[in-house]
Image (cartoon, rainbow, N blue to C red; front, side, top):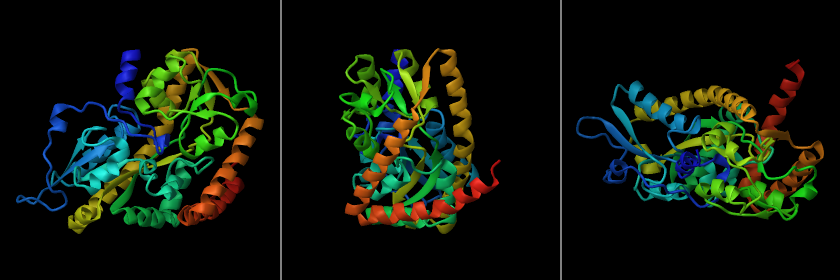
Length: 366
């Protein structure tokens, strides 16, 4: 199981890995040798052929499946006139460098998390690794019925790409811990792998935040080099064998209740596509959003049932710990907003939007 976990760890990034350095597993030869070709314009036969690198191992549930669902839908809907060759994570560039790979023309498109572009545009963290952020359904509502879609487009546009929401990942687990966390005092001195804004939250309680590439996390936990780590959704954690480490599994994943999955192309290549093919890709992405919304909770329930049968110790954060996380997250987000007007504008709009749907839910849910 450990060997299987290692193989998957090399190419199965979590949406909350935020600004960590990318993973670059050895690609299959056929993928690595794909020649650089122009994307966007149809070829002599009128066909559009795109090379898209995914950030997610295609074999991983939900995240990997979503990339395959999308490419299959595009080919089927276009009767083969638009085809997307999927390149595995790391085939042309490390996942953290996917944006540059698209801009440089090394690949035509990316299927990834907004977190990976946050190093260049921190406001994109609002669409992914946002502590105490929206649920998957709330994200989708904001993107479609609110101003989220406009902000999303404008931020990516400044980076030189056209992005389309192409899925939504569900809540991650709160992480794997070696010891019980009865209060925030128990975090002091712990070596913890948590990324992005959530890492800053834990650091304020005295945790030592350790930056690791995804492929290192399992072994660092196994070897006792770190004391705790968040990774991904339970279905991904199951595939990677984290239950074999005899650690305590904490919930909820306050650091990332949900995250968007994006498809993007360099702006000029996107604009070279005929309008009907752009619409087709957008429609396939919209269908993928629906599919991921339905698929993710089912897969997490199955994973949790498996963990219980395996005897994994599952804990819910104590109320006092969650309240401390919430208060400190609010401080961290406010400080980020104070120094980044774009981050502030997006975050403020999201919060204002959510007031309405959440009030409605309180009224109608029994």
